[in-house]
Amino acid sequence: MCYLVAAFVANLVIKPLVRRRRPQGADEGRISPVTSSFPSGHTASDSAFVFGVAQESPLLAIPLAAAATAAHWSLIQSEKHHVSDVLAGGAIGLGVAYIMRKSWPPHTFPRGAVTTGGGR
Image (cartoon, rainbow, N blue to C red; front, side, top):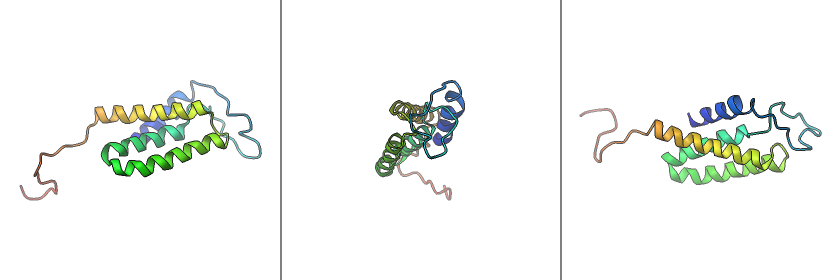
């Protein structure tokens, strides 16, 4: 859910309001997106997913965060986004994951409770 909300916020709410050109060289020899460069929608949705997973399964967050960081760095290295685009996308993802956690907390069960749905 965090992934979808962050993608919506970054791509459909903020991008249309901010008209920022892609870095120089972004369209040399390849097809370049026509949307605004700011913020990075990929970074926003990826970060929201990683932060959402971190809240539920901290051990899985470590390899996911490493992979996402490498992917976001490649967006900068390949001149698809400015550094500030990626940082803003990360902030959006973190904000969405935080708000989702506060507004939709996970179910908590008392110690020893049966969670299989059967019996009791």
